[in-house]
Image 1 (cartoon, one colour):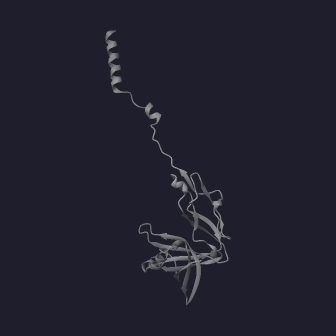
Image 2 (tube, rainbow, N blue to C red):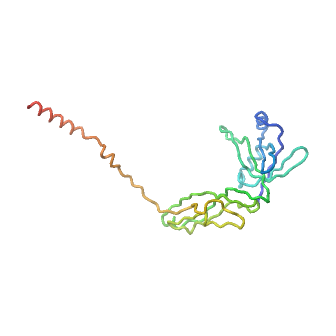
Image 3 (cartoon, rainbow, N blue to C red):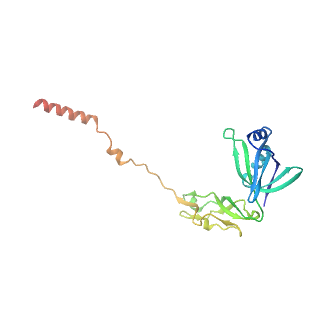
Length: 223
């Protein structure tokens, strides 16, 4: 299990004033919480956090928080639970971390990686992908980075469902077995047809109306 490290400081005080001062100094406020434990207020250097998010695992990876405070250092294994950004500048303004335990199962959305070119596509079909991640539950040490699916054998009309996916022992998929992941379908030409209502609603030719009016006027004069 690959773990990224991030330094943090115990944060004293709370409120908008404290948060503004932190951001002005190049840090952001953060909170670490977990099941059955009190939350801990933290501050993190913005530059360090942005660099971590730009790595391959980025927002979805395990993060070891190295917390400095009151003359001692603590290490907490965590996952990013929520990130808040400024709606105008799109800069990070707050982060929530969730503490995890190695002996407790986690439930995480794991991305799906497709490999291969379906034979159905080579025959003129097209891919319809319905799911881009799977919800899995397992111990942190067994959590996969992604789920790799070989779709090269799919022909036109074939569908890959959740029940077709086999993962390592101890890793459970929580999505419905019948849920579709990907299908290969035949391309359908879309023909544009003029609605019948449009033809029926077409106005009569002005010449015909004029001709009828002139004929009616002439007949009236002859009476």
